[in-house]
Image (tube, rainbow over all chains, first blue to last red; front, side, top):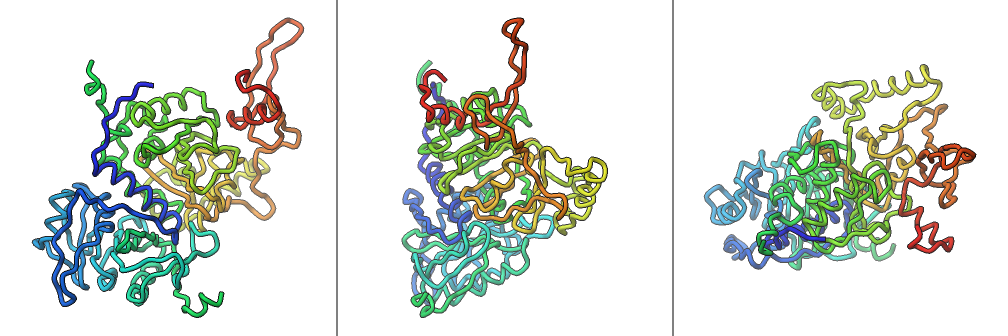
Length: 219
Length: 294
């Protein structure tokens, strides 16, 4: 059959590929997806704070940027504080996506530079009973995600229970994600993405427990 | 005309911003199983109500590596299926198949394929009517509040009245179900036969209503409970003596068609056959009938 379409641009092809991985990760919580890095986008300058110069995780920021455009808005968080309108990184995302930076309580998308910023989640909207979809989707860069570990998940999309592992630092912040699961259908949907592009989706339907390390080995 | 001039469409027809709109709302729909998420439904070269919701979902998720199957009432060759498949292949160049097992994305109107679908497949359903509460509350704003409050009492009264008037649950299609114990969802796109195939399935189900501008989803391994009473149970269309006249299957969803009289001795009559034409053909091939004669 005759075809009549243009070859997608690098960014458009990246968006489609990334989306299918995110779709699968969100539909099957606990499944680890492998994202690709949009190297052609470059990266915003690392943010310097008490921990030194922290670069953005471009797997995670790229995944967030693949979903936003002039119709939507976003907010960036780093070191447990929101980056302001005039911040270099905020402008970097804005000029590449046309999405607007808004106050956290109005944000549709949030990219969190580090796991310390998961503590900002309570400031994000969870939707209303009539419009529970008017809530934030969070992309958080984490140090490490692995196949097995202490995170045990239950809920729609999971056959019985599922598990995966992260580093200690991320585990200590789990409470901020668990808090968004207490008022279903209100809530916040979270993607955790590590430095190698491993991605886990945690929709608001997923109930999370941390199982002590010894019981994981034992069972 | 030069080759470049013919390549006038974006990959998968709709532009990237429209895809992103559908993609964002699909993620919300998965996080809220059974909840109807409004989306900015775009104009397509196909009339609204002819599958534009399902089509926009397929266009938003399809990648060059996909293998696509499109069915209408289970049939790969009916008008709606052929037209939608042609639009999608002209604007994506993806491989197509009629074999349920071979497809990575199946777009469908009114059926879930007979063969069990796998975890690596996605079923996209075209939805004509979105809200199960439409029967009892035609006002959209009030129905939205009822969903928000999980206020489904009037629907139960409707079910009860159906029994009082007709002696049984007289709901042919559009059977209402509860999804993950929270949202009531309309199963308009499928017959009662297929309703329980949504329950704890391996596959992701995405529903799109282009005319009503709503998207919803049933993730894999999600509970689906049809509305029923202890003494009046949900029933499928199954008949004990049912049989496909082509392949002889007794456990499939059937459609009827009229066979015209050929001679004066043989009058016209009704026959029933599998609505899933791909499944029926496979059964015939398995029985030793050469594929090219089908």
